[in-house]
Image (tube, rainbow, N blue to C red; front, side, top):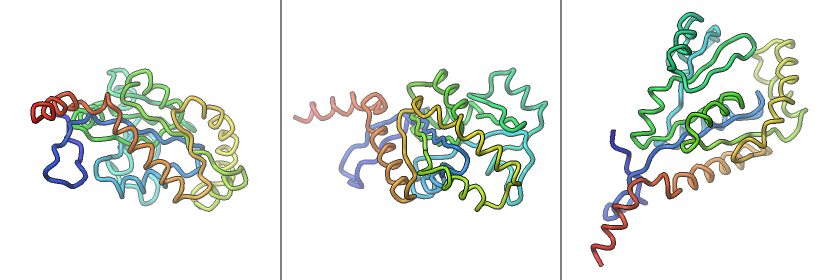
Length: 223
């Protein structure tokens, strides 16, 4: 599949440069803001799409199959693991989550970027399998009281689940140094701007602009 041509500043007279897509990972402790940042990015950027995970957990109110997750049973999930159909997978609070390989690889080859809302375990697995395509961002909360407040404001989880998520937050935050970038979510607009800047810079990396050699040859030919 041909790799997508990069946008050229809305000037129809400027030739586009073919680009390979990238995998953008946003990770954080639950409640630190990665899901909100992910949604804003998807709403504002037409070149990036969400990697829809498979999961064995029950569907929550308002969730739609194949939009929020692919909801499957344990038997099918185990078969996908055995057959190498998942780029990464993990068990979290007794439920399994994983990233289907085929749609991600197709998007990257077409020059589209893929967004991942996954934890540090999944990020490690992606780095092992596709390091050259990966850009990882860890989102930190400004404080622990703020993190707990955000969790409680969801009104989706019981006190026991919130306590479990708070206990898990320390372990999750200990992996911040394994990421390419760290964003502290003091202010959502500022954090979103930081993520946009990271994405813009990574798209311009020489090794991702696969059409640069041909583009430069055309420039030289016109001299």
